[in-house]
Image 1: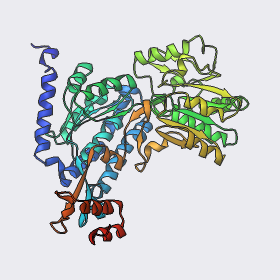
Image 2: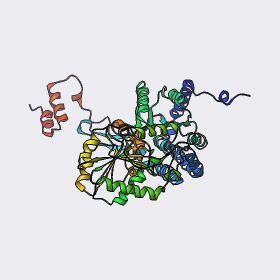
Image 3: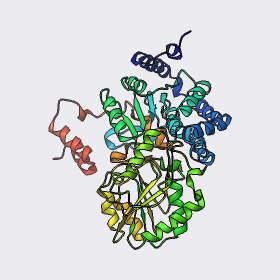
Image 4: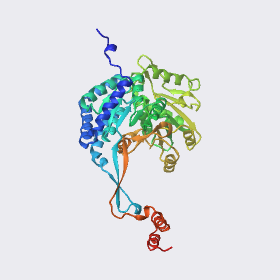
Length: 488
């Protein structure tokens, strides 16, 4: 009897090429461009999430021990919101946009037509395996594309579920799922796509970008970085503390690209802030947070070891003021706060992506701007203050994918805001209309009649024609009159 490995058909470069060819054939037929097809596929994603909510929650529990509330609020509800918003706005998005014309093209009309790019590759991440898989797929479908989804193998239960249910609910001639790890991803990246959308880390992002460059394929890279939280003293400390905790440990135990990565506050205020964080963390997760059902586990041993190494760095090992407990067999690390961490420590020189929260102290809060700006641009930046001038200065001076004042992470939920990075935290943005635009080409269209044909544009060129064209292109009515009458 054949083994499972022998039964499995390898997905190699030839299989990837065949998949792309099939999708190009479907796209070429025009099927995916129709409004009705786009609507039907978006409704099928909604039906999938409604029919299999429990299965999705169970898969997330298996992969990450993700709490049911987080699974619903941060994944299922956001997928539904994205779908419903696209369904509501799709007809308007697809309409050509009127554009202004000029005297140069008179008489004429102009418009901008959104057309689908073609065949899209979406490479997803493990930390929010349903949201970060389906949200870009929703945008690609809304824009009228065919699409291949490559879920992350690091979340195997979620990957398997996506492959199964997208195969059942979606039009498989236009929407496909390819499971696997590095060999399968490499085979996909060898192909020519019309756009690649990758969510993950900068190291793999560079590999994706290099592969895309061979075919001049445009990319969207949703990466990450060290998202700072600047905390002023003139605030509602309890509310601020709870919102920091919610954005850090309440988002997959810190395994989120927009989770607060480190805090900057003043030396005088740091002890007060630390005490408040300790108090609220105990309320939320108990005296022994390793036993809490409301904290996700670390995704695997590799990431557990990486986080353990960050804590074991000699520059920070004596800076832990709260937490630090670890449970290796169950891949649990307790919420951990570190105070007065050196800027040259390991923990301050890579994205933490876990339940560790270092605090840096400064003499005055404005010094935080220089610290943030001396580092690669983050995916998000957060400020807690009631100082209006400080808010304005923060928004003006800090370059980040997104900025939130007096809360964390919630900008992700707004379909009206673009979500994406800048610099090393990413290329491109999506969500809402920005998703539709990310997977569309804005085609410039100019319509002219055969009337008012201007002889001045044709040879033989004469000084009179030059005077007229100069007047036309300079927008000088008086000059046009002078040229028409032959006045010098």
